[in-house]
Length: 320
Image (cartoon, rainbow, N blue to C red; front, side, top):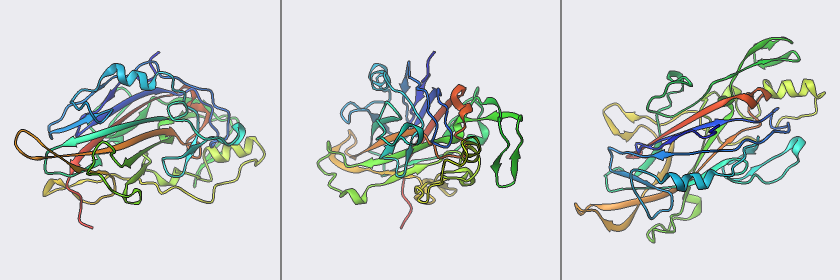
């Protein structure tokens, strides 16, 4: 029962994950069972002279399968929350405790390296609306098979949507996923001397639906409060979340239209390739979690399967 079936990074870069959720999540408040990852594979290819690495030293177009399996071997995912994509915590019925990387959420480092002219890395090309669980295509997406679930109580599932008691409908764990790409100082590159406050933090809701985002007053929040006699109060502070990805200019696909989803600025290493071009490098941490404060974090996701694919691309950043 492979929980992580495949990851693809093609840089452009495709990162694909299959997850089985074993959770019962009521607006980040319920006690979730764990789920583990049994297998993982990653391959990478590039048409942009862009390479990737898990350790910053061994770069190639193919990541070592055994190395990735070791990272995710003992992971357990639970419903957690984060304001910045860096610090995580549990809460509610479980009590407030720090979230643990690769026990409660997925976390791994990636290095990017290139000698092309483009000097920034972007997350690009959301194709959620074109992809189903059983079909794939190039681009960034988060999709799930969905679970048929029957409401035990009448609740509000949107500004103008009432779900009546006993109604059966499909619910999707994919709608509650968050992805953060956190730029890091690359300690393996002596030329990377940037201060921490200049580094990029990109927190993304791939559903691209702010109406059902963090701390929405309906959906899972309303349902849980009806079941538990208004035990839960809404948060008053919200994470800085992006709901769209950068596109390339129609006139120049290597030029970013804006910097909304820029995740990394590459820094010259002092090395040169065989054509005497300077080599540039950078490091990020990728964190992926199930956001318990999302309107779609219903208990029905415990039986769902989710696929995540990320597409990164080297582009020229937009002018400030």
